Length: 467
Image (cartoon, rainbow, N blue to C red; front, top):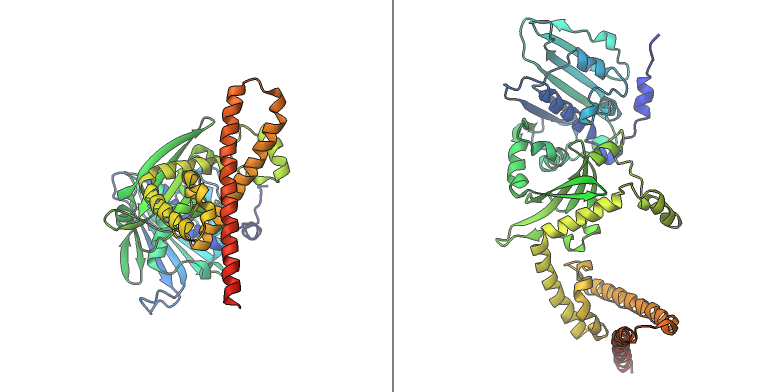
């Protein structure tokens, strides 16, 4: 008696966030990449992605949602080994290439069915075979036998139809958005010299994904490596000039596929808007980090990483956890290294932005907020934390926060100096330290006085207007 698998139950228990509506299609495309890797290398290989809208007769209606995707490849086909893996829950057949054995289950989470039509060659026969079947929740592998045919070229046509809610509604509908999502998910594969030709057929037109990638991504690509406790990471950077791209992002990849995305302006305020080249060309920066560590830690559904670390627990437990898991690389550590590399790659642009911000802040302090004048000598320490498009309110809040933090630091320093006065051994060093402390204390006093004068001026003007 063999182990049974309840396909309906497996589909029901497979999580797929609605914002990952294209993930089932990506799994199908990845199967095509892998099938081509196993195919005859002397052929010119290709992957064709055909997209069908709900109103298929209304060509050019980019607002109509997609209802069907067909992926056609020139790969090795559904031979017996691939078919056996297809019928094995959590198959390890492609484990060394990052396969989780769950991609086909995701098809049925977002689509009513998948139709497979595949031609392949077996090692012990000279003629080709054809295997056709429908994969849905009533699927029976015994109803998908191979049939010998006289002639045929190896390859597979997979059709995902009956796009289900809420995925149909969440899926991007314009070609530019669809192409951007495909490229960013498979960007590490597109970088390979052996990447096959990839086309998207949509609204009666054929689009080359390879050409779009070369023009808008690869032309400005860069690479940087870093190591965290003997674990090596590679960060690829791209300047994207596509008009649709409007956010600088960091993508965490596993097995050459994008998994998790973070907006960089959350960590680098200077990246709150597009950057400009000297010729006026605007771009956004896309960074993709990959490593064997991320390959190992991606969850079965490719929606996140199972990475333990300090940022995943309560604040009171962090100190204790940092001692216990010092050998674990956390997402926070990976992000910190990525941000440092991104800042380095964009140094010239950031210096230009900071120079403009300094001029803007100096004017604001001179004209409207003199209480912050003492902070200007420390501008290099906090200028990165202010966005280039900061309003007066944004600048006020940032400068107020910086001044408050320095007041807190001064109070802590004064307590330490008083409590340690009786243990002084190096009086010259203590005198220097005291002199520096008094200088900073005087600066804060000047700021407080300026704030008082400014506040008094506002009150007087208010009273004069209301006489």
